[in-house]
Figure 1 (cartoon, rainbow, N blue to C red):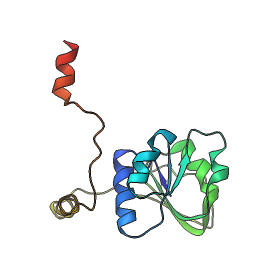
Figure 2 (cartoon, helix red, strand yellow):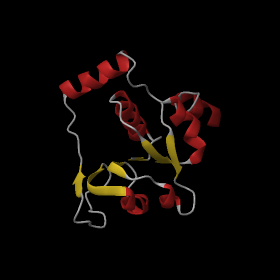
Figure 3 (cartoon, rainbow, N blue to C red):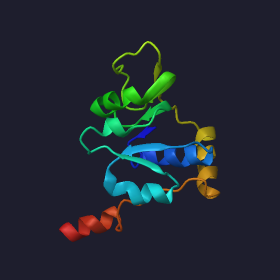
Length: 143
C-alpha cells in the first residue's frame, strides 16, 4: 500500500513497485485515479472518502509518504508480520506489537542517482508534469 501514491515520491514508488510485479494499493485522492490507472494500478482508495479505511484490503507493507492521520487510518489493513516504512516522520505511529515500523531516509549518492537516471532513461519510471508552463512563465504572467 502506498499512501500519497500520486505525489512525487509516491508516484515513483508506484512505478518501481509495478516494475517489480507487485500489486499496488494506492491511497490518494480520487481525482488522480486516471493517472494511477495509466501506471497500471488497479486498487485505488480515495483518501478523502469518509471511512475509506473500511475499503482497504489486507496488505503486507505500507509505504507512507503522507504521515499523521492517513497512516493511522490505514494501519488496520496491515497484516501481522507486516512493515510500515515512513518517509515523512520519525515519530512512531500507534504501536502494534505484530508489525515492524521503520523510518527511511536516503542518503543521496552518485551511485544512487545513476540508478535513478538509468530507470528514467530506459522508461521504467517517468516524471509527472504538474503544470503546463515553466515557473518563469508563471512569474511573467503575474507581472
